[in-house]
Length: 271
Length: 353
Image (spheres, rainbow over the protein chains, first blue to last red):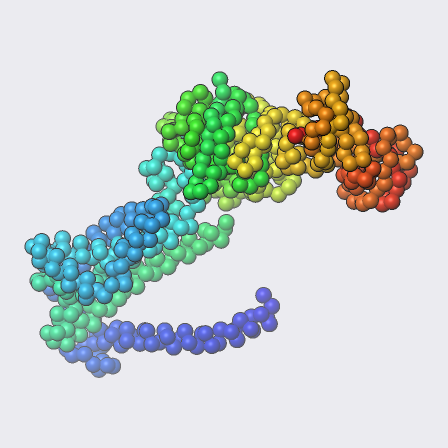
């Protein structure tokens, strides 16, 4: 690359770069305020905090109701993520290989929870949970979360499957691999990046889910519900600390995905 | 025992008949090439042998066993694709071992057979490489080793050299044929390249529009094309409308415009309208002082290095003539406008109705 090229690259970057930075500031500013506030040493929320400390982190990590809420959120997300991957993969495979007309219909139905207003979905699931006598139960939470998490897996896996070279499967078949062995030795290893992404998305979606769980819950509060409950009770800095912790967990998972994406891209570069 | 037997197989997709009533037998150890333009049904036929396409009619037999209803993984065929289709997430060794693993061959035997197969394609030291670290030619040889290691009843090759450059392709052609003859493995080869077909095959099946045009040895296909299609697809040809003047036990006399020629004996009788097929390189061209029976004039000529391709007009008929670039019949290089003499030996002419 000549210096002139670099120069024009920079010039092109000036406008887009400026816009990007503005958007980033707009997105990150509220989070920054929240994170800063979480480190207050006072017993009320104020920005900027008059004094700093980790008092509220100590508080929520020791408080039984916060511990229980975090435990529930992790438990549910840890069950929902792998189950979503299994169901979503099966669905994505069916969509990828099924008869053409069925494919479109199936895809539309399966990803509809992504676009439907969650409040509507929540209402329906709530009635369903009531009818099944399952309100305020883990079963109901998990089933409800699955409806909104499976679509993420269907979408990421669908993209992975589309790039899959079908002649690899035919090669495996000609070498004696039946359906199960083709899946195990050829398809799954080739879509592992999509599986991983789907699992992370499903975990985050479940971990962050609020509206639907809010309808189903009475006493068994998840982390987002605990934050909301505390917020409506009194505006205490504990919610800032809890929110920051949630933010960190989500960010860590996302960066895991990005790091893995780079590894995959690096592998392709060698090829 | 025959390796593969196609009995009147046909395949129709919605509204289209891709393969119509094809019957071919591949004998044990034989190398048979399905040759034809794209869309002629050759790949569909191969995929019916492999089991990926289910015939609409007819039966497929492999090693005398009816496999028409059998899924691909139970058919014992070795398949090599144009794009190699090596498993990118497996090493070369694991790729070759895959078929053995599926057959539950013990790890020890697997290792020795993988080594043997890779040695066969001269890639013994590549076991732990990944496919992306290999050149196209090497990848194709791994694909071949992977297909051969399972000792299939038949080896199926679908345009295997299509992605290779010309020099490598010529080299692989020789190598594959030598390997095939050494192992005596029955092989079905699909290609649109007549050079590949002519140089490698025991027999060629020429296909067009879902049907077989002609089955025969490379020499039969090239020198005795039975249809206009085969003649025009297999290299360049003079395809001339002719009329039979007289036919007897010794020869057939034909007339092409004002031109009268002697063709080999045929079952035709006087007055029949036929196509005379004459290969350009079978016509002998000499200078005007030469001994040819026909007088002509060069109307166009192009230099191809090893030969000249000349267009010669004789008795109102234009003929394509290939002149080897080693002839001593010309004092100088032939040029447009030169008066020449032509000889067309009777056995250079094939008559097709």
